[in-house]
Image (cartoon, one colour):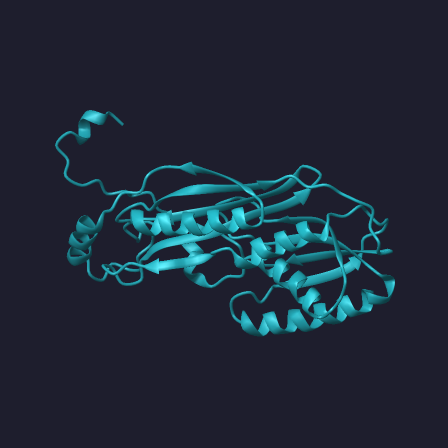
Length: 267
C-alpha cells in the first residue's frame, strides 16, 4: 500500500479477520519472549523409562481463541509432573516437547521420565486420577483430551533435579491466558499471553511466550512478569516484537456506531 494514502487519515481500521460477519476494530500488537538455558545430561539413577503423551486438545490460534478456556498442553503436562512430585514419586526428566508455535495454544505435549521400576504403576495411577479430574474440569471444552503412559524403551540420560524443577516452575508459573479485558468494549480481550512452546533436549531448555495488548502498560506488565520468572530459574531472555498503540478513542467511536455487530475479537 502506498503510504501517501494515509497522509490525511485520522484512523486506520484493520480488516484482517477470518470471518466476513465480524468487524475487527483494531489490532493488539505484541512481543515474542524467548527464554533459553543451557543444560547438561547425566546418567539416570532410575531403571524404567516412561513416555508421557498429552494429546487430543483443541489448541488453536491464541489471538482469537485465548478467552475460550482451552487447556494449554504444555502447562497441563507440567502440572502432571508437579503432581508426581507432590505424590512423593521420584522421577528424573529426560526430555520435554510441547506446543507447535509461539502464537498457538499448545494442543499437545510429550515428556520422557525415568523412575524406579517399582514406581511405574504409581505413575499410571496418578495419570488415571489426573485425567479424570481434568476431563471433569474441562467438560464441554476438551472432551478429546487424553494422557497416555507407556514404556519408553532404553533408559536415556537425564537432566539434573534443579533443571527439572526449573522447567516445571516455568510452565506452571508463567502467565497464560487473558490478562485484562477492555473497559471500553464488552467482550474484548485487552491483553493476553500465550505460552506457545517449551522444549528440553540436547540443545537446552527453550521456551517461547507470545504477549498481546492494545494498551502499552498492560504489555509491559506481561513482559515484566515473563522476564522475572525466566530470570528466577536461570534463563536468558530475548524479546522481539513491535510497539503497541492505544486505540481507545476509535474503538469507542466504532463500538457506538455498531453496538450489536457480533462478538468483539482482538488479534
